[in-house]
Image (cartoon, rainbow, N blue to C red; front, side, top):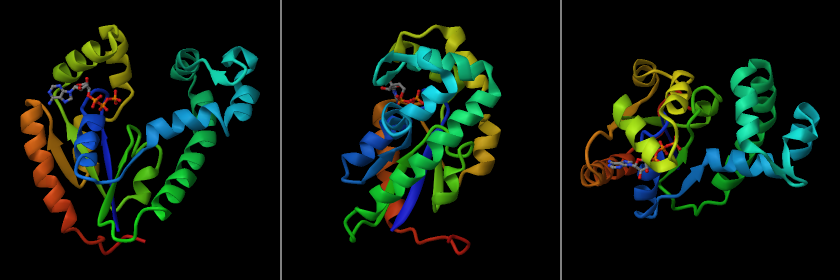
Length: 202
Ligand code: ATP
C-alpha cells in the first residue's frame, strides 16, 4: 500500500481535499486531529509537567488557545511539546495503517507540519496544496472568523510556497472553485491508484 502525505499552509484546503478523497473511499489519517486528541489524553500529564496546571481549562482538557500562544512565543517550549506529541502521532499512524484492509491501494495522511514534524519520512509521496496567500487569508477568516493579523502571523511560521514546491512530489492548485478542485481530485485519485513505492523508500 502506498501512503501519500497531504500538506500545505493554513487555509490552503488540505481538509477539503481529504474529504473529497474520503468520498471515494480513500482512507485518510488526520494527523492534526490526532495530535489534538493525544494532547487531551495520553500526553495530558506530560503537558501539565511542562506548562503547569494553568494550562488546563478543566481537569481533563488543555486550554488550546493558551497553549498555542505560549509555544508561539517560546521555541524551546514548542520543541518540548512537539517531542511529546509527534512520536505519539507517529505510533498512532502506524497502528491505523496496520488496521487498513489489505486490498487498500493507497491512503492519505493530512498534516500541516508534514515536513517540520519529520512525518514526511513515513510517506511514500507528498502532495502539497498550493493556494495563493490572499485566497488562504480570505478563506481562513471566513471559516474561523479569525483576525487577519493572526492568520498572517501563523503563515509566517509556515513553509513558503517555494519550500513546499521543492519538498513535495505532487502539487494541487486550489485557487479555483470547489468544482475545479473536485475535478483535480478525480485526476489525482486515478494517478495515485497507479503509483508504486519509490525505489528509495523503506
Ligand atoms: P488548516 O490548515 O487551517 O486546517 P486547511 O488547509 O485544512 O486549513 P480547509 O479547512 O480545507 O483548509 O479550507 C479552508 C477553508 O476554505 C474552508 O472553509 C473550506 O471550506 C474553504 N475552501 C477550500 N477550498 C475551497 C475552494 N476551492 N473554493 C472555496 N472555498 C474553499
